[in-house]
Image (cartoon, rainbow, N blue to C red; front, side, top):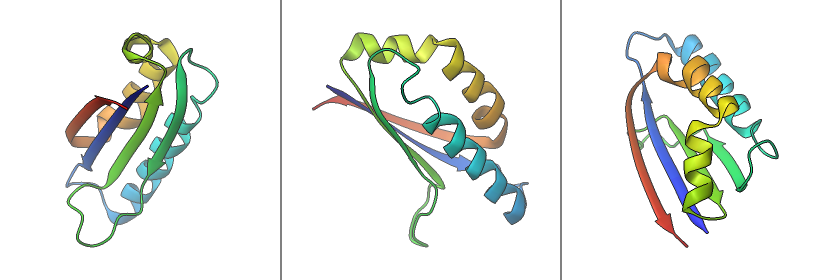
Amino acid sequence: MVKHIILWQLKDELTAEEKAEVKKGIKEGLEGLAGKIPGLAEIKVQTEGLASSNAEVMLDSTFEDEVALKVYATHPEHVAVADGKVRPYTKTRMCLDFEV
């Protein structure tokens, strides 16, 4: 199994209300990929961090193997969510992939 963890910071120019909507869209979009991409075993998005956090959104996903992660990266449904709900609103992205 392979874990794929992403942390994002949202763009500074977004208002608190806009950030709440963006977080909701990211969560619904990414979690909506469950069952649609081969090899994607689990996908969860956390949008409610503690005040001590320096990231605003976390993706925690699990794949059958590294090949499945590569399929996910280019899968049209994932690309649509990334291009429509994530990339336009995020200023930083950190990723950690590892075997479990």
